[in-house]
Image: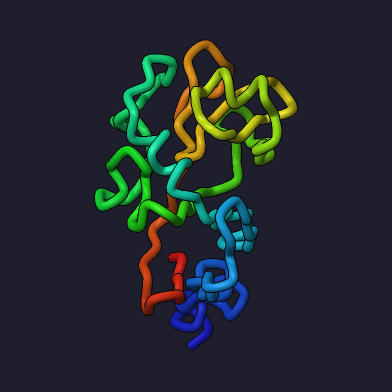
Length: 161
């Protein structure tokens, strides 16, 4: 019996991988929530129509603009890297050394560099990501931010995992 019980995941192990559900109805454009999933921070950001439009323009400064080498669900392999263009879901973990980038919507220099109304900056080593988590060329981060498996279970209900 002890051997068979050892094959069953513990309550803590099940909780660490359990899906996270949240309501995104109150997120205004430019707002972002952070939730924990599998011990990692996950961002949920509402993007404005201007932000979405900027992501759809080709940008030669991006290292992997089509996300060919990046981790995301197949349904998110698009210019906004999302199931819904207005909502972005990504692990808040830089692909360089695991730091947590910060959202910069009021940084004019970053906006000019990205040709967009802001992005994410990793303060540790200077990696820069656009509002779809795509990394720019010539920074330490080798890949775009990871987009976890997620789905919408209702008009404003999001399930991560």
